[in-house]
Amino acid sequence: MLLALLLSAAVVTLTLGRSYVPITDVLRILLGGEVPGATFTVEVLRLPRTVLSILAGLSFGLGGVAFQIMLRNPLASPDIIGISSGASAAAVFAIVGLSLTGPVVSILAVLAGLAVAMLIYGLAVRNGEAGTRLILVGIGVSAMLQSLISYVLLNAPAWNRQEAIRWLSGSVNGARLDEALPLLTTFIVFGLLLLSRSRELETLRLGDDMAAALGTPVSRSRIVIIISAVSIIAVATAVTGPIAFVAFLAGPIAAHIVGANGSLLLPSSLVGAVLVLVADFAGQFLLPARYPVGVVTGVLGAPYLIYLIIRVNRTGRAL
Amino acid sequence: MAQGLTARALVAGYGDALVLDALDLDVPQGRITAIVGANACGKSTLLRALSRLLKPKHGHVLLDGKDIHKIAPRALAQKLGLLPQSPVAPEGITVLDLVGRGRSPHQGVFTRWTQRDDEAVAAALEATKTVDLANRAVDELSGGQRQRVWIAMALAQETDLLLLDEPTTFLDIRHQVEVLDLLHDLNAARGTTIVMVLHDLNLAARYCDHLIAMTAGRLHASGTSEAVLTEETVRQVFGIGSRIVSDPVSGRPMMVPIGRHRVDTTPAQNEAMEAMGQ
Ligand SMILES: Nc1ncnc2c1ncn2[C@@H]1O[C@H](COP(=O)(O)OP(=O)(O)OP(=O)(O)O)[C@@H](O)[C@H]1O
Ligand SMILES: [Mg+2]
Image (cartoon, rainbow over all chains, first blue to last red; front, side, top):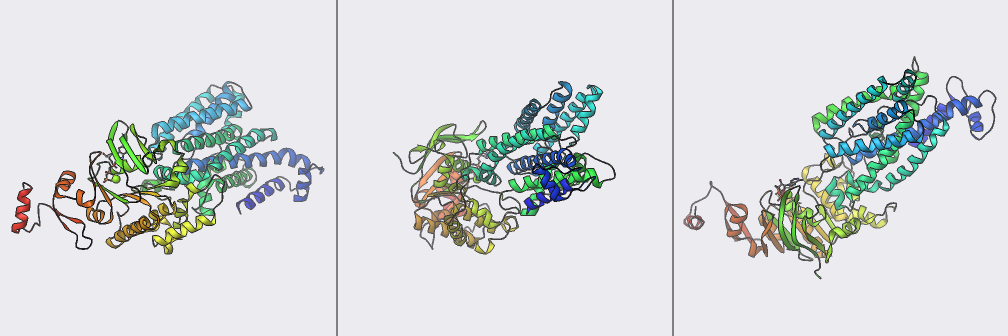
């Protein structure tokens, strides 16, 4: 069902836009054919954008829900607790400060993401549970990193700054197909690694003790999960910028759709992709002005964040 | 080489605080063992150390002569099950799904759910009388229903050794007795070795073959309920006076506590209380 939703969203973004290209033409172009007047639109303008949106969405959705399940808290998604900010800070510094591009930026982003994950983990996780303390520490770390990003930006030359700001708001404008390859590779490698831990992740939802009693090697699983999820998120962040709240929203939305039973990894990943596609499309064509995708998802995510904080405050637990 | 689950000079705790103090234990195989003791004396810690959840600082826990920390986690989980003291179910998860997770040690990374798994889950639901709850959400059940569901999950794991931390808390008296009967049946039918922490001394004495009384991280006494459940031991372990009479139902020892009030001072009891120096 989610797969069908994703396919139709992809079809919509490929056929609709400034001009309408019938689906038959789109298919012909994708298979290498020429359609006068439409080939450029689809191949250069739309296809890279759609592909990148899907990959980024899949990545954010998967990495986000892995964290939420592992730490048993929907607020513990990487974009709330500062891991995405860590990756962003490193990427901004690399792009603006060091004028780097390509894989080096991704690698730096991954390393920074992992460093932040370790830091928050060391500071705040007790018995594998992400309580209020982790959320607070994470939000604090996130704020610190944001000011670091502002500092780097203020000291950057103007032409670099423009590019960095656009990137920071999370955007697939000017997407190129060659950017998709590292994203795809990371997603496949670490996605499979995460999926192979899916059963263990499910036992971790029952608490560390229960997980261990069910034969899950708790610390080892957790390390594999953290490294995989952070890598996926950080590489996607390095390419598209931190698209606000996709990692945070995808899991809970998927849980609403497929129910609490069974693994949420794949559903959440698909929901992430649909979210990015739809939000980008809305940002381009449905709203009065053109907005980067991150602005649209940001508007969607903020109310949910507030709702969750109120609810967690009231009941003390969630997910 | 020793068979079954044993602990040798076991020292374990949290951070720098040591809870278990050079403890030696042989769990009698194929028997029901009950652990009793005051709050915070280390009962849960002992179960955690026995089931690999806590790494010993010194000493060993051995299963059939092999250090449990040298056995692969999944292989161990096929032999030894544990129900922790207050497990928390994820929001919205159904009974059927939760009980099914008891099967996870029997499943490989990508292996599918099998007929065997179905049978184990069905048997566990049946035994705990939770069949009717199968499609309800666990977090919407009463405390007692929930407890039975957790026990069902532990049963679905189908281990030869089952450790349970206070399996009867939250249960009304009828369900307490039902759970203990159920564990007794399991022991009789499959020879499952059972170790459980219980707070009700009388039910412990009635249902166990072997009773262990703990104080401050050590075994204070262990043996048959007749040997362990004495007025002397109750005073040393719980710091309270008591009378031990014979349980009219089972013939096992039964403890009647003596507090400061509501003590009907007939001559016999006066005598008993004087004997305890009160
Ligand atoms: N996770 C933990 N971290 C630190 N200390 C702990 C932890 N769990 C238990 N303790 C401490 O270890 C000691 C023994 O606790 P344990 O849970 O083993 O007691 P218990 O005999 O099971 O008590 P109860 O009857 O209340 O369940 C207590 O002093 C307790 O405060
Ligand atoms: Mg306890």
